[in-house]
Image 1 (cartoon, one colour):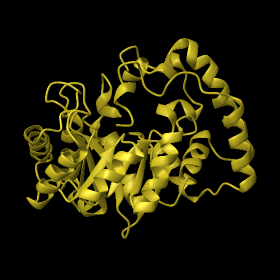
Image 2 (tube, helix red, strand yellow; image 1 turned 180 degrees about the horizontal axis):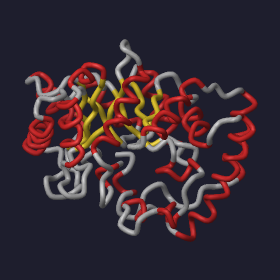
Image 3 (spheres, one colour; image 1 turned 90 degrees about the vertical axis):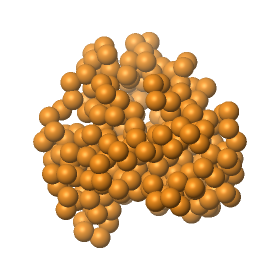
Length: 314
């Protein structure tokens, strides 16, 4: 994500990638754009400002995009705070930075606040929907049981969880199944394993200040092992005449018609490559081969870090 880098990409480079994604969807389908109140280094609202600048410059794209925004953390940290006062502050901050250039279609708490019952959290968000602050309620990094409880209070439009060839835990499968049962869209983030599953990067290419350096799977002792999986995936992709990124995205899409992968890219050529994965179908034989690979080579390291892991699957 360009605004989470020490030196963000130039606006026009990011804008061309956004335009390419929306154009690929066509006039009758809205492209999901994913942002967050804290998706920036300095300031933390840098991504919202980027979204504002894009839709201010290209207002004709506003109705062709579905904007999902994460929030619900404290103003000065990433700690979840789903109190009514903070949720209202978070939503108002987001809308202020969007500046009316694009309406927030969906709001989701970035993590489930363990201090407040999910029923109370969703009741607060439903109140904000009624007030016209945004249109739909989403959830992020929640368990299947929590998703079911939340949906009883107010319809949940989408649940955002990490899904990839190396992030497919038992709870991932449960959330996907529960979402299908309840008619909820699954927004699958990091389908490319934070870039490593593309087969085009190594640890040396990740800046020392990059947030991925904190992830277990990006530690030196883990990444060497995990590259074996990347190389095996690349072999399958080459045989099919597609890129590793396209194979990874197509695999995520194969988890169900309600599962929508959202690979992040601020590079227009990468964006187009990723979008072309939508037309790739994996055969039963392909899926069996990939399943056998994943069963035979265990991913080393958790998908988060010692600080992040307690806040996953709330």
